[in-house]
Length: 476
Ligand code: HEM
Image 1 (cartoon, helix red, strand yellow):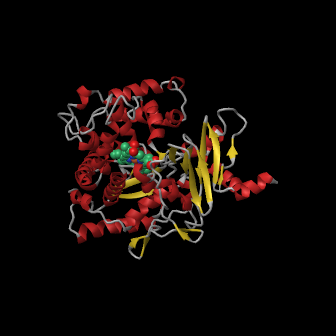
Image 2 (spheres, rainbow, N blue to C red):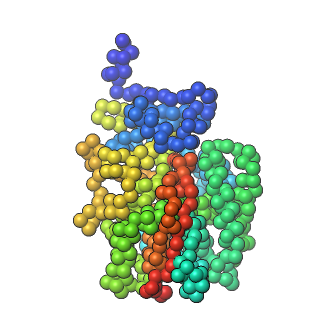
Image 3 (cartoon, rainbow, N blue to C red):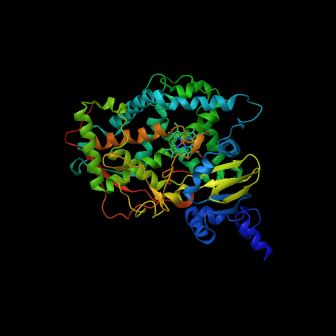
């Protein structure tokens, strides 16, 4: 009786603890299978806050988005880098940079993030547009080849593979530059294949499975790292300032980590943006019309499109909607001290130094109270009366954070503007040049839930599509 009176009146309580019966492993296996399903079940059982033992770590999940602002604003007490500095070096094979061995390094890295944003975004996006055009033109826009393909000029391809090839190479050329005497790197396809092999094991590395248990993964990682040996990188030209200005210890492995950050999520995000448009003709038509309007009204040439940054248009909304649909990024923060974290009126949780506090925005993205029929793709969900829609509600209260594919707070993804621009540029070129169709008779593509928590989810299975040159396709 005393205990229940104490629990009722005490404002600072530890959240319910879910440990499972396997020591250390805890609930890691169930969580790894389908994190979304797992967390939704425990939310129903235990409410908005609970702690789960996952592979030796006690992770406290905050499931109510109305509580997010209280966590996000505590960037100093709840730090992102303590976690990323443990995980990233082990995964990508470089020494921890947030240590006394490398004084000044964290500040230097933080400064380099500005080179992806603001005024620096313009040259970067201009270069991306040039590289996208180069890859599209040489691989997909050859009129004769298209006509020779028979089938009335239609070509068939696998959509995720198509997005991966184009975005991997164009992003690589934009960030790292081109070889000395050629416009394209001859080894790009091998690099991409190795990258995909490594990426398949990425969730296991994040889960701290030793790399020597993962077959060829260590050898593939070495190969990927060695792609960035200084004698090779120094011969490349047109390298972005974001890369040239970074002076990192063991920089080859850092380059590899940045390559992962820059394409690991962007490729599946591009796939979903394209897939949803191609499978929703009304959305495809709205975005196509917008592209033509922009090109006609503003008399833009393709190369000028990169300067066009309106945010309340169908294409922006369509990209956000596909991110909402496919994003599964967790926001993981480590407590830097003991403190009481206020979450709701009168409710606080006791946090101890070293505790891990986790936000799982996918639960918010799929909440029917916030997004009507959340499973449905609605390209115009984020646009209202010609403006960007920003008011979404939970329990009658307006949400400060409602779509979070890029993390939150001071450590929010520094490449987010570049990423959105790249995806828009890809869609613009695609829709401007091609008629597009899904090959009939294929099931709806579903998400591969096994990577839940780690960014944009891949499709469970690739999908076949057909494309042919648009009759009035421009080339300049
Ligand atoms: C960090 C998502 C594209 C560079 C992150 C984080 C997320 C994320 C969720 C962790 C933030 C946090 O927990 O607060 C995405 C998604 C992308 C994308 C969904 C594409 C759709 C990019 C691109 C680049 C990039 C294109 C670079 C060109 C980085 C870097 C970090 C990061 C360097 C680490 C930041 C830090 O250490 O403070 N990203 N990202 N990302 N992202 Fe992205």
